[in-house]
Image (cartoon, rainbow, N blue to C red):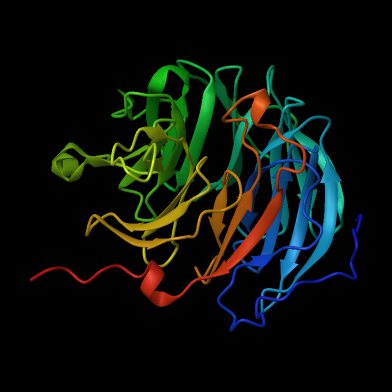
Length: 353
């Protein structure tokens, strides 16, 4: 188990009254691609373009300590945990899926594709746990970690860009705006296939905790809320976000940014969006209202995650290549931040009478 700067720590309580977000010590050395909290304890796994996955322990006051690190042979694009929090799974541009065993400190390769693995998700089914990997080789593969070959392979219409699982629901977003919805009782055949309700490239899909629908975020500053069953279709809607006026005097909302990630609160079912504009919002989809706006970060926010109890919200501030090579300026911030969630920020609004 490789430890990194175990002596440093940061605290969530600060001199100004404890409301400021905490910066994690010893962040990755290149852009952060993925963050994921353990489902059983306050450990945070972080994947980066520096080819490494880092694991941090988050203390009660938000102080953090680097616990372990393991490597891919290319940028890490996605990280997740298994159900009991003993294993971290990751996928990367080295076309490999890797597993880190928290108890032994050993990393091993557990999945292989013909192109980068864009997303990894753990599926906990009645039959046991399975790793799903979605790749730019236009497939999803399911892996039983005890055997070297995939249990099954699903052909996608296009390259996998995003995927999320809340059993028994799995939603996959691909290039060319295809979205496939799976009922994991039948994991090899899509339950339904649709074209994204948004007109532009899909950046992220995220399942409702209730598993009856999902949110879609696009590169054009827009989010769609979609229910799976036709009977709920009247509740589908989309809204604009992560947009800005060209100048203080015009209200044109003409600067449009990508929605990079959507995270649902594990208790209240509210959700966050983050964007290339460096802003984060918390939303209540049922009241169709915004609960909170964060102060603009000094760079794009590529990824976010709530911890298992929904009391800590982690987000990265890193260059996301949204402005191409010219946007990669020297000294661009690369930070991992922790926000202590207040009830009024994440609780649903009461229904209007």
